[in-house]
Amino acid sequence: MNQRTRAYLQGRFGDYYRRTELSLPPAPGLREWGVIPFTEGPGTTMVRHKELVELGDLSTFLVDESPRHVYFSAGQYDDPGARSMAEKGWQGSDLVFDLDADHLPAVDPETDSYASMLETCKAALLRLLEFLRTDFGFEDDALTVVFSGSRGYHVHVRTDAVRPLDREARSEIAAYLLGEGISGVEALTSEETVAGLGRSTPAQKHTLTTDGGWGRRVHNRLCTLVESIQELDEAAAIERLHSFDGIGEKGGKMLYQAILDRPEQFSAGNLDVAGQYSHTLANQLLESVIEESAVPIDEPVTTDINRLIRLPGSIHGGSGLAVCELSLDDVESFDPLIEAVPEPFSGAEITINNREQRAVQLSGETHKIPAGNVTVRESIGIFLMARGHAEKAPE
Image (cartoon, rainbow, N blue to C red; front, side):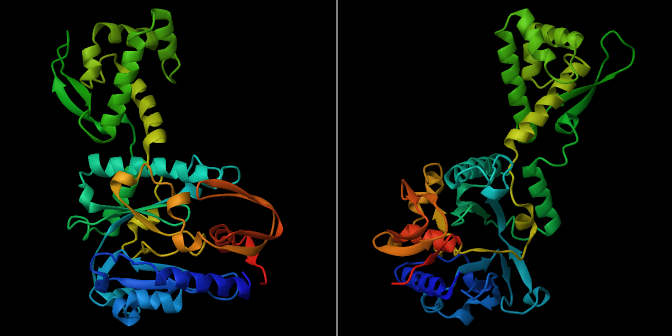
C-alpha cells in the first residue's frame, strides 16, 4: 500500500467515524484497548495495553487517529493499562468464539468466491448458536453476534457463569464444539446391569443418551435411518445397512430384523438391540454426525482469556467493511456484502489503479473491474485498496 492509498483510506476512515455512533462493550473502562494504525511498509504494528481513559472520548480518538483496526479485550482487569498481563489483575473474561471462512473445512479459498465463503461461514455460525442454546443452555440475552468485517463472525458469551473460566475449562468447551475427544459412541451411553436373557450371569445394557448433546444428535440420525429402512423392501434395506463399514451381510440381516421386530428399542436408544452390529452402526453414524455438525471455531481465540477482539461499529482495515453487531433475529437474513458496506462510502466515485481484472460482489451486485486505472463506486475502490488489490490513482 503506497502513501497516497494510506492517506486516502485513513482520511475516509476518519470521515466514517465522524458520522458513526459506536456501541461500547460492557464495562469498557475495565478492558484493554488496542489499535493497528496505518503505517508504512507491508507489516502492521499493534498498539495495545491502553485503557479507555488514556484514549479519552473514543469517538474523538477514532476521528483524530483513524486507525486501520480497533480492538478491545475479552478480559476485564483491575489495571487494564498495565504493560504486562501479570500486572493487569485479571477479573474474568467473556467467552469468545471466532469463525473464519478461510479456515473452514468445507471452504477452498483458491476456488470459492468471497460471497460463497461467507455463506458457508454463516451456516457454521447457525450451528454454533444452536450448540450454545441447546447444549450449554445460554439464553439469547447472553449472546452477542458480530460480523467481523471480513471473513467471518464472532460470538461473545457474557454471563457471570463464564467470566471466571480458566484456559483449561475454555479448552474443554472448544473441544466439545469441535467434536474432539469422543472416543466412540460408548462415551455417549449410560450402562446398567440387567438380568441376562436365558443366562445365569447378568449383562450390561448400553443406552444412548437421547435428551441432549452429541448423544441426542446421533440418536436423531439413528431414528431417521430406522424410519428410512422401514420404508424399503428387505433386499434394499439389507443392502443399505450392509453399506456401513463393519456390517456385513449377517449384520445387515440382524439389524433389519431388529428394526422390523423392535423399532421402539431404537427409539429408546438401546444399543444392544442387534448386538455388536447396532454399536457398529451407531459408531458409523457418530463419525458422520461429527463431520457434519461440529463447529470449526478458531480454538486459540476461545481459550485465550486475554484476547483482543474487534470493536463492533469499527472499520476492518483489510476490507473497508464495517464490523457489525447483529440482532439474533437477523442473523439468517444478514448479507454482509450489502449491510456491512459503510453508508459514507456508497455515494461517490473514485479512480483507482487496479492490479488485475477481477469481479467484486458488493451492494447486491457483481462488478467486473478491469485492470489499470478505472473509476468505480467508492465502496468498491476502498474494498480493493484495503485488500491490497489496488492503489489510489492520482487525481
